[in-house]
Length: 133
Image 1 (cartoon, one colour):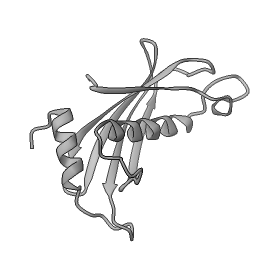
Image 2 (spheres, one colour):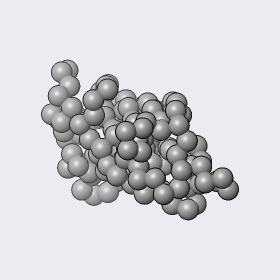
Image 3 (cartoon, helix red, strand yellow):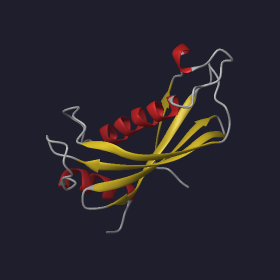
């Protein structure tokens, strides 16, 4: 898959086990950081409030990450629903893909009930990803 957005991130000492391998749970944090950077890049995160929650994630690990590797996370929105949307990710070290993932996210109100995706988010994603609705 081609990605229009990617961001570089650093692995921290706390991210690895005693053998120097990146802990599998760290990949979800890397994707969360990429998701925030993605929506900031689209100009819709100006108040730093995240109006959606993670509902589901599927991760496929392909290669171990190691401390000191420069890591890039690619992110894309692949589907927009009424209140939910889907994203895909790749965590890469150089040309090697360390893991691939998909996530389902849901826009929520202050009481954490599903709410429609805001017009600003929908417009920004549709334009950036060139999604045909």
